Amino acid sequence: MKVYKPYGKKPLVGVKGIDFALLPPCHSVLMQQIKRANLICSIWNNATKMNPRVFPPNENGWVLENSKYTLNWFEGEMTPPTLQDMVVEEEDLIAEGDDEDLLNECESDVMEEDIMSDED
Image (cartoon, rainbow, N blue to C red):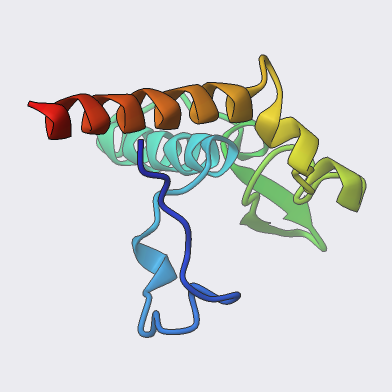
């Protein structure tokens, strides 16, 4: 079994011109966008009514700051509270049953198959 690894220490050094705006938003950001769009659509849908039902902007993706409404970009923490929550340790990558032993067994099986095919 062949294991793919990066060739150098910095595999992303050759990648240039990535437009991060093309990445999809995370769940909390997407929910705020949906709430704002829903509020704007309800305002336009009820624009011709004498007594329209008005939804509160505070509950629909907007925040009142200095007597003006601004966007509420997301709910919750922007980043994890500690750096340790973001770091993936090598032990976590190998967790749940000695993947290295399984890899060594697969490599030995492939070598045995190669030897058997060479004898034929």
